[in-house]
Length: 177
Image (cartoon, rainbow, N blue to C red; front, side):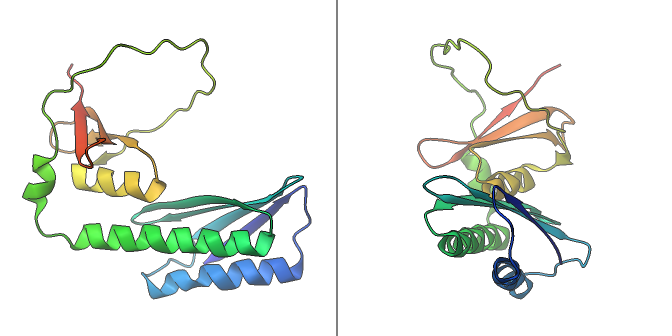
């Protein structure tokens, strides 16, 4: 695995680089990592805290975490803990054999509450809705730590959205032509 370590408002020292690379090398014990995989780490220094952002694209999806802490080295440790937790959750999800139970938690019809009025758009983001099945979409959503994920369904070839429900299950919104 390659490392791209960037400092914002801070110079990355050899000690910081060794700590980050050493901690991230733990991924090899969880799954095979391609030699061309690049782990991108951004360290930012703020007046009262340090922020570590780690992004690692893998064959299973993107591992990503952000952590703020007064101590940079503690922030690195917390980021590693979060990545390990993401990996464990995804391995558990992959080992499930009961896809029917997962399918039952999806709703066929979504009832919308009153629309929320927004004064202005704060951020616009473009995404490519990659073709995949619903299980992979849920896995990627969980790995990213998001509450929803947009994808193109293999079976219907329609743009779909999976999301986390307040009751703990998952929902799926499918578009019509």
